[in-house]
Length: 279
Image (cartoon, rainbow, N blue to C red):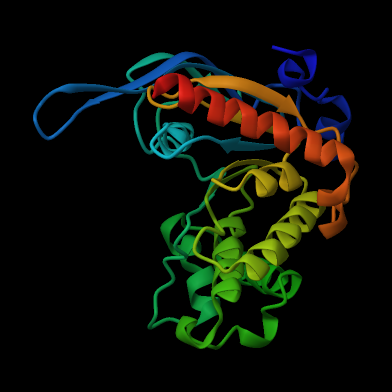
């Protein structure tokens, strides 16, 4: 495997930009996940996975359907327990969900009977946040994402892209240090998806948080990521960790750069070669 595929970005400047310590956000060693199917048979879904995510990085994950991408995200979130391995988040054993982790799923899951502001404020009740401070932050996030004028609207009055912006605001209300994105634009049309990808890249840069995103879209993974992890078919293994050495801020024109196309071809070859081997 060539050096470009195995390389990782140096994290010093990114960590300083994020204002965080040098302790890895995620430090996994030989992490596995197995479960029993409906017939009671053991299914080895993922791993062993070794993974480090440094403060301030944006890490994208791609791979074929059913390869364990969502399983990995849910283990990182503390929503599912790993079967084996050593798992640390910010240097401590990862044993449960944390208010320091925000999650955005493919479906926005906004309550239709509540206003956008009320939906964004939901974590304040769940996490027992100071209501006055939370409301102030909610308005700041709504303004940052262009939703301030829609704060009193119901979700059904908004477009798909606007609903995902509202979901982003809700995930960021508690000011999490770490943002997990589970195919956040998968249900959107191509133009809206592209627009929101660039918007997310801008917001990530402004807020200086760490992000981990799974996606089926190779271009999206490259456009947003500092690194692109490629996973194999089940049991999911990380078969490549590609450094995305493209300048920021990125734009629609970034996809036309020769280096972008080179990385895209590397990822495609890895995914399809592995699928062919498994066939």
